[in-house]
Length: 173
Image 1 (tube, rainbow, N blue to C red):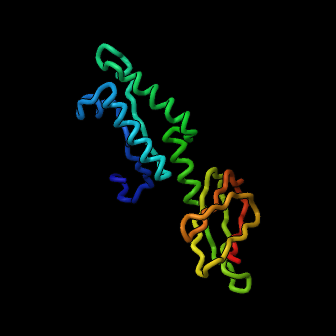
Image 2: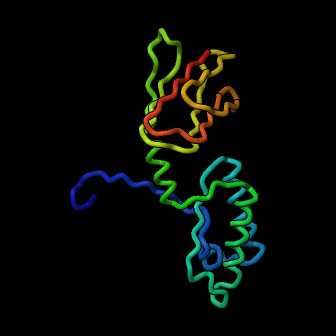
């Protein structure tokens, strides 16, 4: 904060696609513009990432921005078909803050290699990556339901929704 000299908590979310970047700066319209949008969405989806789209309200005025509204509709249709999780930037910020509040505390050695995961705020869509130290080790999760899948040597533990005030125990067996 420039007035107080203290650090501020800011979440910067970069844009992946912006209407005027396509038409004004990259000079793309119609099919070439749609190809650029689709390629961005596809590569973001393949990486499991976050794509922020920005369409200014004046670009829906077709005489000044021909086809811009159609490109936006096509992007929304693509996201719907891809079953993407579409939210506002404010919702992304709330999720990020909830994610930041999650605390992973190592368990005492007598309980085995693992962690107690404290959830002070409700959070949706939390994924924990667990890298086992020993080959063949498998995580055992208690306190919440999750979907487990392999990603190379790692385990991904996917929790749909975790209530506030709860905790999860993850132990490698």
